[in-house]
Length: 417
Image 1 (cartoon, rainbow, N blue to C red):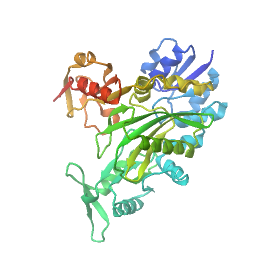
Image 2 (cartoon, rainbow, N blue to C red):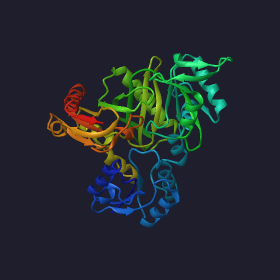
Image 3 (cartoon, helix red, strand yellow):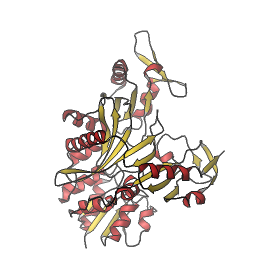
Image 4 (tube, one colour):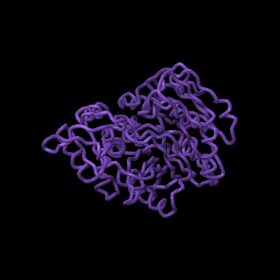
């Protein structure tokens, strides 16, 4: 019986743990939380280790004699996955690829070197470099987004509109008005973003305008296969947190084909030959450009729910097989639609959530989940962790799935105080 190690045992990695047990594999789940939900799956072997404790995970991997290692929907363990793969000769990505897939600065540099379309950007290491980069980006006519070079989930992001900047007597930007009209210093914005970076490196980028999609792929034998393209909805500036997804993309066919080309080029540029990628792309007036990509499956239920509902392809099972070096089936079984929408509510203490039963009983609803329940705090949505809950549906096509999802979502009301 083959042994698969899954890094992470939270709700995000639960589908991989459950699927590996269902496949008759021995599953070793790793998480620093001894009460992680994945540890409750019958038959799982529990290892209470941080997923970024590379030495600890490697030691456990050797102890169990694993045949493969993987994670779902999380960038943090990718370097650990790569290190174990290299040390034990297992299928998977290299440490160089893991670094390029998790460090936005390294990713941008690799994509630029390969000629992959990306936004104007600058990697900054101190405040002087930061101010110069902001000034140059604004002078080029772009709104500007600043983000930590090595974090994810929309953490630490700030957005600066070109028309909101206030300059000093030398013409250098010193402050700006945010989307709520509040005056903020650029030094404050820099320190905020820098605080989310492990290396203190801040990325300054052109804020791309246009529809956003994500692309789910699986690579094996050096070839990248596009499984699905997802239309995305975000809450916009300054945090750009994803509030909904719909499959398949409704963009014109020629645009979708260009998106596929850019996605495959990006995967090759960071060295992914075997394994998944989740690539985020903006379709700008100059064509599709890479926002970022991860050497992992997409989160937000995209690959665990939406792709199987719209294509019949089980990407979790495929990733487990890829990690073990086994053949995978990526042939679509059908062409339907699927959608997810997150609750939209005011911040405050959650007093009551009503309409859940009604939403669950709506047409084509596959899942309704409350993440933050009554008595908990509903925060202003600055990152994916702040979302209160979601609804998932399928349909005959993307429009049908979206309509049914919006109808079910409208039945849910979150009262806050």
